[in-house]
Image 1 (tube, rainbow, N blue to C red):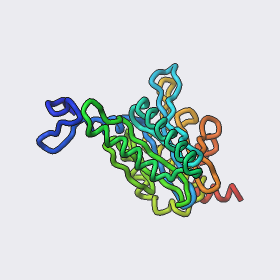
Image 2 (tube, one colour):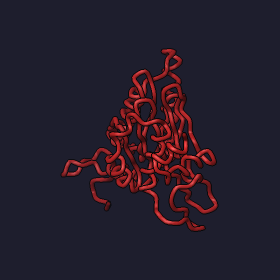
Image 3 (tube, helix red, strand yellow):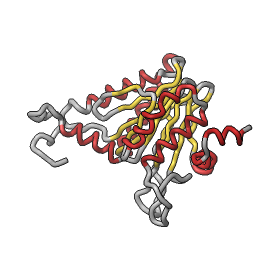
Length: 255
């Protein structure tokens, strides 16, 4: 993208009917590392690929707990994500205090979309440069939503955002019809296989880790009778080892 005379502020429309700062914010989401979400009729899962800016630095967290029944994955500017995460946590706490019941996932997603839309309309502000995948479980079942910097939000059976996410979307489009009746472990396996499509293939070198490892992958799950939980580090090892095992062979091993 190139700078032009119509991208100086958020209230300036181009002759083509575009607001360039919103498009720049959407581009920031595409530059972030991949995040994938998918759901069955009982559970919702998030799988993310973490990055480290420096060789001696730690990996940035991509998953955040909002409440016992809601969590998010981010792609884009982490600082903007922290602001939205704090807002979402406050809203769920306020709802629980006033109504004495957990907040519905879609209601929270709608409020975040409204908050994001304000930043596309008022002078002196800029859109949030982060995309969110929101999973939750409430009385209406499991949910997976995407929040965009433009203020739009969408309900999905499966979705991917971030860099090279199109490869993951292609995998999800081929298999999403199977997701509804899958067990939690099978759902996680599909999420990891989709995430592997976005990761660089090959053997990991000392300077750059390629493929999926316990260091650069995070998983989050929520579902029926299961609170939001983040799986990281050594707890990921069984799921990563199961990637190269065929489902039929895996069932035989379990028996």
